[in-house]
Length: 574
Image 1 (cartoon, helix red, strand yellow):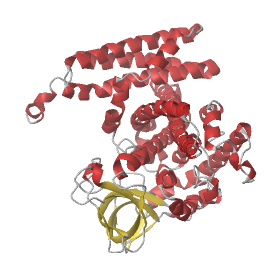
Image 2 (tube, one colour):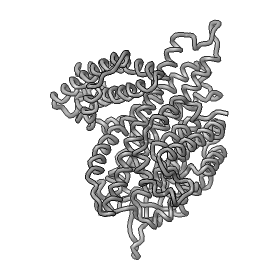
Image 3 (spheres, one colour):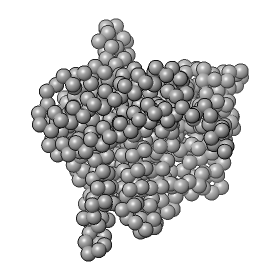
């Protein structure tokens, strides 16, 4: 009986070494729920044991319920008939089992029926669900909608909507994109207006909406007549009632179990969430950051599944009188895949922890202010983690989703021609992976979001701290390589800044972000290798490859590979 938690030594290692004590104390608000709810922990040890039990349950459902249904879900897909969307049978069964296990209100407070667990633990569950069926993650992973309502809505709105998410009776959708407003959400035109009684209504069309047939919809709409930018947008919540018409569902390359809808709103009754004009600049940005972390975990899960398929096939498939895993080229691919899994998982959970720290500190500050207590220390710490999360979240999505495409590509390559056939799971995984570096912001947009922290060398003090430590043996050698990477990064950054050419800097951003990710991930691996010798090989292979890649990044910049961008029309037209 497979369990996607206990069977995965690396995810168990991450769980054991997360050190969520402070985050848990913030999440539990000093463990005040201990006397109110039978299942609420009274201290950190009890909380972590609860987390472990939930991870084992999620791992069991993922391995034994969701994964065996994934191929059928992919083949059947979501149905659309007479304006009604119906999930595939396997999707319905999976959602039912997740609801029965009380896993649909993961981060929501207990008073609304939720588990009140940190985002980091929820992220770990998303990875496991995604390994089982990436398309199901697009329903299970939309719990961020409930979290957004919990953060910004009025108490009566929370009372109305949040219990429906927690008990699994309602699914949700974040309704942002329009036919003429993809990544450029400032161009949203769907109209929100108030009738003569002051009630809000929605009119217009949205497109490419994941689970747009959901029961509860968070909608970005233009509430301020005459505006043309993000300052005229507000956030609204409504039900997917008869006034919301599903015009079509998209016929997609992958993630077939998740319906992607085009919606038409016809004077749909809705409620304003939070304050007017903050829909994009505050609420959507918060929602999107959560979604990007979720997609990173989705990519991680797909990558793990693809690796498992490749490893199993390589052991079983014989060519030239031996299993193909004995062929050096195949063995090297598998080792590279395994290394990437280990390094990406380190970055993923470091990112999740930074998001937890930022969000939980915001909650603590609000509580302290409400009680008339000082919050200076918490505010300083929150500012720090706000910057860290703003860097790591887009960096993580960029790195992990690009890796998922590479790993599924290599897994299919190991399968050879058989992997191209639908009888093999890797064919589905390769299709499912392709969307991850597109939706919730393409890789190019993630680079744009991350470059500010890279240019400002946000981790400078942390890197100085690492460099001042004394390491022994192979770790000492590896830290010397990381110092070389840092030196190359600084030289490359100076070169870009001295050119004082905005176009050149934008083009070089990808190389700079990658360089910085080598440093951040490399030192995470050094920390892990100090705790567990099994991580040493992964750290060594990653850091050596990163040094080589860093030199290539630097050469691309210093050879002015991007200096011809001003002449793009002459180049592409001839």
